[in-house]
Amino acid sequence: MPENIRVAIIGTGKRAFRFYGRLLQQLPGVELVSVWGRSTDSAKRLGESLGVVWYTDMDKLVRETAPQIGIVSVNYGANGEVGLMVVENGLHALLETPIAHKLTEADAIIKVATERNLKLEIAEQFHRRPLEQIKLALIASGLFGRVHSSFSDFAGHGYHGISVMRSYLGFDASPVRVVGSVHEYPLESYYSRLADNYQPRSETQEHGMIEFEGGQLGIFHWTSVGYDSPIRSWRSSRFLAEKGMGVTVGVQTDVQEWLQLLAPGGEAPRFVTLERRWERNDGGALVAMVAHTGDPNLPIVRWENPLLQPELGKTPQWHDDEIAVAGCVLSIVDAVRENKEPTYGALQGRLDQELIIAIRQSSAAGGQPLTLPLDPSQQTL
Image (cartoon, rainbow, N blue to C red; front, top):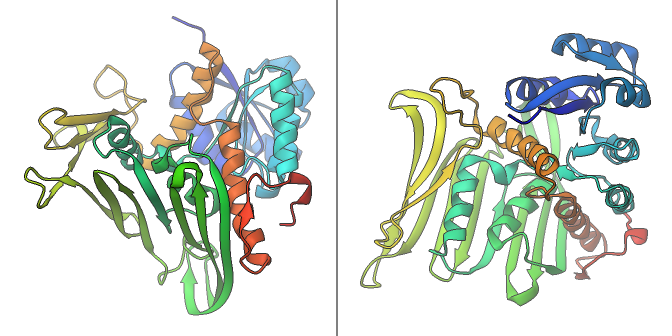
């Protein structure tokens, strides 16, 4: 049996304990060996809660606990700074989203990692959720043919929503032009779950149209209050392909999937049936997402839960987002163990951030179309 991959959590952000600490303690093949924080109090609190040694000196952490991977979980604005610190200390890294707020910071991280032959993965989990993974498996099967256009309509903020939209087109699709429109509007007072208060609010709406090489098109919509407003609970993503289409619609987490192909005879839609397969008929851990296609040549398409353990009852009963975050961790762990590239990677994370920056810069320029790639030295937002 191969040795465990040694992992350190770098930072004491909200996800450090709730997501990464708990996940690492239950994932096979990995060992959480240490944590790092800027302040003594926060580092000590996280280390003691997870039962591992804690540090405020990263060099000392590396020398004394010898982690192979650093998982960055810091305050939103510090991603680029701390991500660079991690690779400069010689660690492979799972970097939180976005990889960095400035493209120049992202480029500095990627440059150091490349020079030192370090693996980089980005904690972009939205397209890794089980419902998204089965749709991507169906697209990869060829049943839908080429995807022509893709929409992210409140499917996630910023780079998250951009990532979902790009996933249907294929992460190898190359964007060439962006048009953006960003506006701020007043809203009725409502109770915010995130702020835990009730008061008048405003929202920032972001809308973007992205053209890709070969004529593919991506449409992006988001509102800054999409995660906590009772008047902005809509969730939808969709793709239009040469042999069918896929539509996700709903509110909050209560969404429905409508995946349609052409019925025999060519006069009506044939809908794909999605099944969540559990360890038992009455529950247990998620085993797989199964698509029943109605196609005689490919009647079933499956996505297997990568966390599934062979012994019944050993697999954690995690919700979709936990499974997705664990998928990010497994991607960097497997990349280090097998000396291969992660399944998503830093260049994809940088591109998602570049696209949301381009939408905002296009809007600031009065809706002027911007040609990609952007000049990182000219980033204004």
